[in-house]
Image 1 (cartoon, one colour):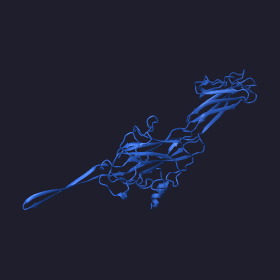
Image 2 (cartoon, one colour):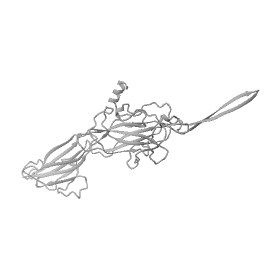
Image 3 (cartoon, rainbow, N blue to C red):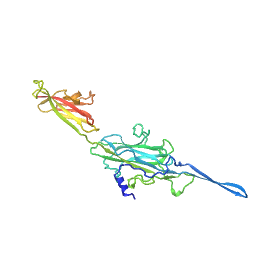
Length: 374
């Protein structure tokens, strides 16, 4: 039975799951499966003073295949993701401790864990979940390079990175998705071909000297039998999770009004009938490292004022409102826009709309438009 202290460590720890057996002899020095070992004994003796020699028959056997491997989560903590993120990656590592070259089948899945090896609660599903092997050995998922979906011809004591890749839904309020990589030992020996799943030799048949028996030596990789693995079954499993990072940003908008001219006073214009007033909308993202996308501002031109056609401008804040920016078309046709901003004025609803796109973390965007006082 698992000790209480070990069980508590698993319940509160991160998703670092692997076969835990200490490998007394590494595969790099272990005799390869299928190697023939032969031995002949020699007897010397003397008869009537004459030295004699005789030899035994040659005893032979072949080394059997000791199937063992580990699969672990090869990342620090959970993968931080955003809503609607595509091709989000969790990373694992598979190491072959078998005394022979092996293929491995890979099966990614998502199951709510009955025991808290992972912290948090699984509350959303990854869509289009797939698994890929690190083909170029750089430890980073490259979509156009890492296309193989099984491990092919992994040498003894060699390791390879494996990636689970999936899409994050756009549902507001979700927090965590827990995934696992299920690895199954398969036959190696034919490069470019996915070997068949290994079946252990029936131990009741004894040990044939000239046959390479298959013996599973892997342990219960997760340590808890109710989590989908068992000792000596040629399978392993490790767990990881996707966690939604920042779900909102500190986006603020500050509105101000400035009388630009009144037709009477030059130095200090007043809010007189006929005066031109500029409204300034200053949008600021107070959250570092996280941008707000699809930012759109709407403002209704107030009663007793008239919108000044063609007066919408968008850009970096400064001066009276927009220091560096462009004057936007205020009709509904945005086809000619090339600066990333679009804007329009709806005369029916007296509404000014400005689409400023993404406001990066700690960045600001200014939107200005003008009215005249009736």
